[in-house]
Length: 157
Image (cartoon, rainbow, N blue to C red):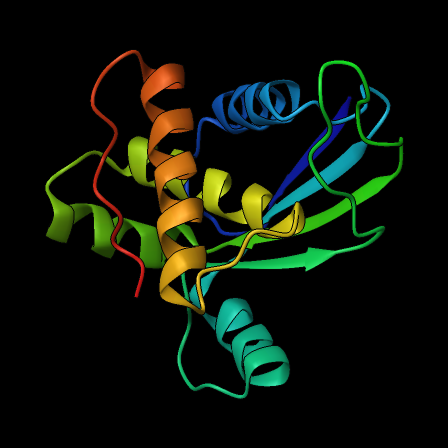
């Protein structure tokens, strides 16, 4: 798997952990090992511009996902095809505020947002109650398994 992290946020982030989390998710969901993913850490100003442009909503947000090849999770017998999974853009400044509110470290919030972003790239959504339950349950399970403890509660709206 090719996972590239580009930190443009000015915040010191454990980029290797985001790569490990992404790889863990992709392996657990049987995404082809030659799949590519890009993670961009953006400052609040850049994130606000993206949020307005793509979601027509003011202010910076925590994470945005931009799927490329519309890959979906595979199975042990039939992994997803290889391709470009897409881009995740995370704003560490917004993540820091959410982590403080939730009472857990920034590093855990960034792992939560990475998980959330990868799941969106794989077609999961939370617009409807059933979708939200499925996505957030999987998100908790993946984080708990990766962290080896209780996953942080979702802080996303």
